[in-house]
Length: 98
Length: 137
Image (cartoon, rainbow over all chains, first blue to last red; front, side, top):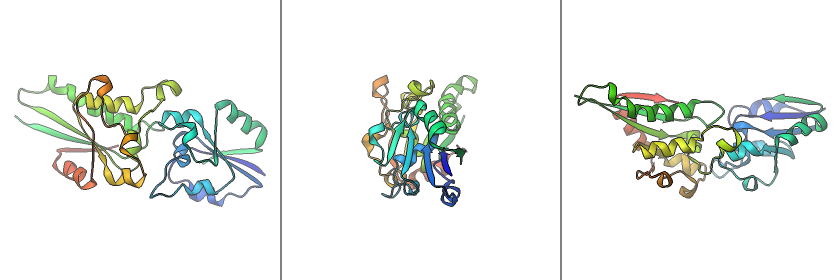
């Protein structure tokens, strides 16, 4: 299964995410989820960034919160709303929101 | 004759919920209630950002461009313009590795003279302790 996971929280979703299994797991950071792409706590990057090589963050949500698209973890690709639609329709068979 | 002190403590992240925006608008609104008060009465608001809430204080928020809403940055600057005491938790700023340059420390661009202060949580605790009303957002 190709599974896309929309993450919109900065807290309390890690347990669910770590239990998901998929042939291809895409993690799409939106809303407050985009903090995972930038914020380090105690010098450590978010553990979510280790969950999958397919990481995305919605550019508008980054900009809203004061982050530049170029200023996030290099593993995360900043995407537009149009890119998000393309991901949902073309890259993943199922999409969930945790 | 009395001054009532209100501590507005923001621990929530911005935008996904209205919590931090409500804290700021309430704190700002508290400056306008004096028209309803008796002579000699007053309200003293204190605004403190702790935990994840310190991320409200990041500069360069583009909420108007992206969501079409006023940014929390603008609200914080309005608070400073109205000379509210704005405190940002030092331990939490350090935990996130945020430099002072990245934080909204003043509102000079809109004519404000008051600056925000990065203080230890113990100082914020003192403000909470000395307040008549404590409001967590």
